[in-house]
Figure 1 (cartoon, one colour):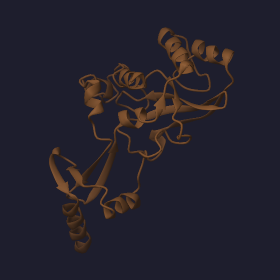
Figure 2 (figure 1 turned 90 degrees about the horizontal axis):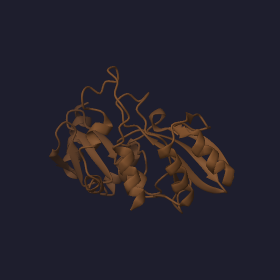
Figure 3 (figure 1 turned 120 degrees about the horizontal axis):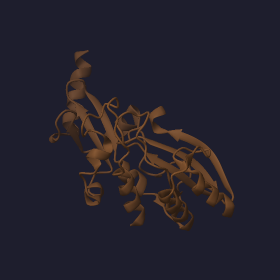
Figure 4 (figure 1 turned 45 degrees about the vertical axis):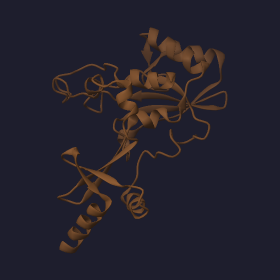
Length: 227
């Protein structure tokens, strides 16, 4: 439960405002998330499919809460690092972004630490509901990850402080071994053929208007025959 609580704290972390960031008065991720309880996030579907009836396009959104909580863990190393992070204000680039020099020095003093790579989901294909910025870390030959969640409006700023998590037992490359971060159109078509996707929300009206799998297939066929 403490992993879920930490993810929730990150999702509701105030990452500030700027009059040029495009978030207006209350349209930043952290502002919207602060209106939700942890139970609201838990009740979200892991993935949602939307259908643009006009153009026949299917869009997929993966809940960032479920993606992170389903296969990340907290151990003593994470707890110690994150506690120092919360108490520090000496931010520096220690091979990863959003990291306190004091917190990083602490884990390096007691364990063998190797930062493997930095990544940001904004720079590639991603269906996640929010952007992640992270660094893969190896500590005593175990796989960890330093994660920041983008809580702002503009992708260039508005990231939370980094928090350290241990990857799940069966998860070395992805955060979640079964809920993929991204599916291309071919993979979605295959899932539709197998009947894995049953309901689609309307692209404009959301859950207020839904389509069945057969309705979506019929509309896509109509559009393909039209052209």
